[in-house]
Image (cartoon, rainbow, N blue to C red):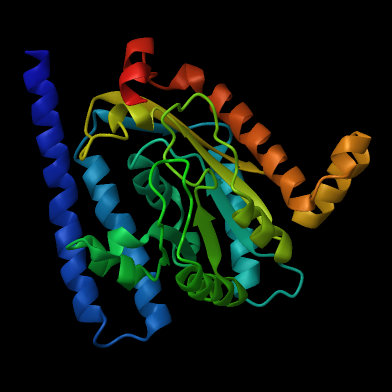
Length: 306
């Protein structure tokens, strides 16, 4: 009986996702004929936000709650984004980094960002996603950045060097035009959610180049409600999510502080390595803090997932 209910929940969740996404894909296509690119990108992200909010509202057994003074922290981030959008010369770019254990991570992130932040936010997506029906229209409409992976497996991050150079130019333009950059710095979906993967250096170099303010958006429980190897989620469960400001005075000052406090061995490391290791530690700590408020995989489930 339990298996039947679980299957029905998945089917309902799939329908609750598919219909709103199809609707907004049509709207985005129509808007593309009359909107300038930047306006189209912002409107598309907002449409996705509301569509996915509807999907989650229709599936209350996928239960997600915030933790750790969420509203207060979100207000601080929103103010940082607003100041930069309005041209404040002292305002730094905002980067939002998340752990990646499930397709639900993306859904949750965009639905929880306020409209003012979501309008400015763009992310990296695998190039293959830009070829899928419906999703390709949405990806292009939002102005997300295509990553031309060539590697095979979760630990092979080879990319087409010519194409990624083009993508990075677009990312730079977005940041310089007051945009917010969101991405999963582990580089791939994590088959062992309880241990944050090593943080990829490329994103850290970008953060240092722009002396960005980094926030982490950590989730726990998504891996149960939408396991990474399932085409569609919708399993009953409960999860939590939290924000943390990692570098309120910018990445460069943070690294300088860490070097001063660190050992002689640490001081010899490249800045992006120091930043990467620190962020991984902070993300791990945040994930651990959310354990009590989230569904967890059993040992047997972890073996199946890996």
